[in-house]
Image 1 (cartoon, rainbow, N blue to C red):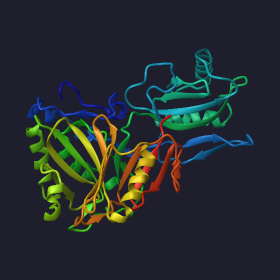
Image 2: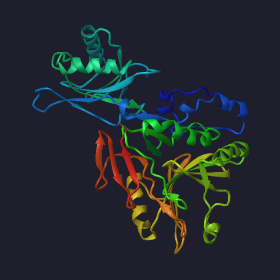
Image 3: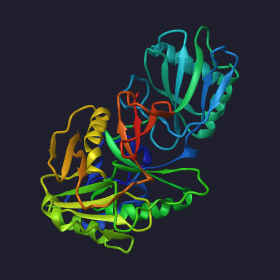
Image 4: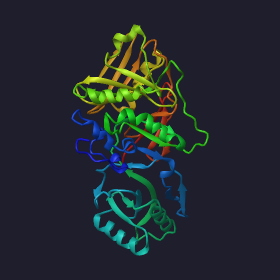
Length: 401
């Protein structure tokens, strides 16, 4: 759209603009037919993440550690060695002890390793002086083959010792986004429910991802009829983009979605142009449409169930986002706080009397942080933590190297 080709998943992870690609009013109806819906939203799988290998403290060998997330690395991290590879493959972050890394040492290591390993295609991509080297492998089997040589102690060179290898990914995600958890058997249903509404809005939607978990007994946790999911996302269409907004609205008017009616007592506190929908059958975030906005954008919305918790919720998100809200109202009835998180996105906390809110058990709020300084946070993989907010919503925090 607007000259964009269908994106690969690697492109979707590493877009220069973390806000993704919004559809313009100039895009024609037939351009939607060119969009591969499986490439609009990122899908990750537990089975995609190779093991981490880390040398034991006593140097007696290496531990193999299962991970559920990639270590995330910024496109601008460290010093460039080769052009970032395109296409399939997997990256590994290698830690090397013995001397600070400089380009000549990386070149020597690469030459030495290629003489020891045949049939394994890999290239150094970036490095830093502290001893970390980001390497691209052509496949998961290449990654595993390299790990086998490493754990056998064959890749150490002179005083340089390879002490760990972890699966990594070059990424440029939004500061705040959502992740929907599902089982492999349910992924296509989830994709269909979401992408039909999203495609008229975005050709590369970075604010919502799907994560396949290995759970044979997984079932979607649907909020009860008459309630609104606690977590949602509003698509803001600019004033010239009414035709595409209508295409999204048509998708949400299918029998899979139900329009949310707000209590009459608070209708004057809800934007008149907002239309909000909840999914009837899947544990999805609510999706809202707003038209006539000054520019295209996204609102990640968290609805507060108990007004007594609003101050605690506001403080919690202020702590992990790292700054105060840019707009707020804390009257006796409706309450809201708005956090600016990028040029085109906001996190909005809201309490609206009479709106019945149900927890979004299958949805996580993902927040990029500088570190996990939130009490009760549990590390799930290196650079990834989980913690419930004060009302029990799932929050995933991640740090980018």
